[in-house]
Length: 457
Image (cartoon, rainbow, N blue to C red; front, side, top):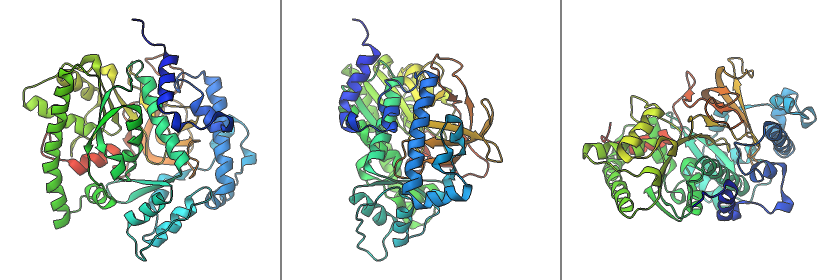
């Protein structure tokens, strides 16, 4: 039987996620840039640049006129929407350091801080307690219809990002569209999936929350961490606090993790015997733990093209060392029988809505440039050209409820074209690292620290 055409394949994808796509008569420049292209990584460069310029200008104008904090910031830098008319002008847009999203007060003052960085009109938020906890403040905003989520670094200080419902749905759509296009023709809604992350419905950790879309794009999904994951649990895990309470949390977690790994292994063998197609999505650490356990048991699977793996950035799989992504892929071949071209990593972050997914051919991270502009900055925070290492920054047109023009703490190298595949846009080299002096962070690191046990380590 002939392979399904890419157009038909993506039509099926959009049909699954039709509720994520706004009605076409009301499309904005962002919608044109994200929803119209069938493959975000195969847009002709001139077309991608035009879509990008219009989408980012639209976002910049929105934040300038509807976010007093960011407008003041722009005025201090002497930049307004009138100064941004061409693609070359986009690099004038003032960038916010990612540390800004960690610099918030506690209690009710946190609610005021969220209101100040939010773009647009806030819904009515009700906080009953006079001295609310972090989770209570976040929960109050989310009860009002927003999707305020957080990530964290090793300091235990959370990064807080307020998304309205439209921005959150856009981010969800973008992450799966990016992955599904790269996995062509292997996605199918009839896949059996395992999410190796926290249950999206039981946490406000962004790495888990954004995976809500997984349940709409695959019919049958199991969840590895199916319990409430509060801000306190993440803070304790990431900061390495040592007291009686965190020791108890750690002990319970370790016992639960061993059972979790065994459940995943039973699930794999069950669906292998049934001849089912499977998708493993989540943190590299947990998938590594599954493979290490199988090695210890002297067992392996030969899943072949019936299974695929998509990992969510971050390769510090043990406390003291990283594992190169190429070694991870080889282990997937040796233990699970999954070919390297069906084992892809993606790079993203809580502050952004652009998802860079590895190509199957060379495993370089491709950038969705129709709505997202990558920048590499030198030590003076000035943009540098292709092929140079520097600090990663971006202009994100999909961030409609907060200014998504951000300098990160990551060090990257941007190439004009993939050295291996024929997709026309820019790519990041696969091994992204943290800048000197920046704390370790990321969704995979959060999960690793929450569930770290003696297995495989």
